[in-house]
Length: 396
Image (cartoon, rainbow, N blue to C red):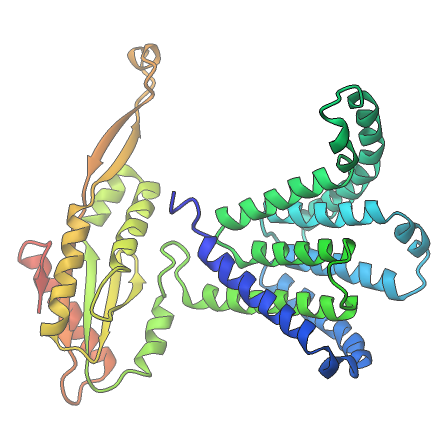
């Protein structure tokens, strides 16, 4: 259940930050209203930068959302050929915008300038066409359902409000299910989109779009940071982040090098998919280390824990606790059976096996005149001794 709602925390923080910014804009309108003309001009530059950055870092969903809102803003502010038709079909406009945002929360990020980008543009056009014909379908349903007395008071909500509720539930579910700031940005845009339609928000579109596009921009920046400094598989800080931390460490610290015992053999036996699951499980246990330890994935099945300002005696209990936690954790593996005649006659297509893994740990404290790389080498040598002495232990 916790894994299922893995995106809850990051989504809540991002949404709170966005709506705090929105409340500040609403409260201090007198400060920015005198510069509304400048905001309107700067907005085009924000659109261009955000679309280019989103495309470059393969955040095509944000790029597409920004393009859609740019077209909307141009339609709003310029005398475009379709302007009269669009704004005379307000219900279609709100339904299409909401549908596009919810659909973008479901699809995956792919290259914008590719066949995937073409398919997504086609999907957006389909949402617009489907929204247009939905009103005819809704009218037919209203006529048929009028005969049901219990439903009659609710039929007025069938054409617009019912789809909007469905889109909102889809967006909320994706924010909870997917650990991604992109879906959160789409949800915040959805709230602004509906708030304007129901006249709950009175701020001008230029200001609202500036806030939304800046949200997209910061999401791309944060995502690119995590892409550079976070390991994609385990979500732990990467070796590059470790090197950055090394520049800020003081003279007193302790390093621990950790390695999963017999991991290559485990991979060969159960496959790389199971091996990846083991890496993630071990990483989740290491992330719970006490004693102010900072965990990094060093590479492969190796991890590093840094204890700033700690001695080996102070770090040792935390490392022993982590080692024991990994050893005690039971991993359930489902192995597919071969498709023999007996297996085909048996309804059970797989067998369940429970295994456990262990880790070996090497520990080293920075000594006088030693730099970070030299201390790390000492920890690596201690790790080698831990393996030579039987594995599943901590060696100094």
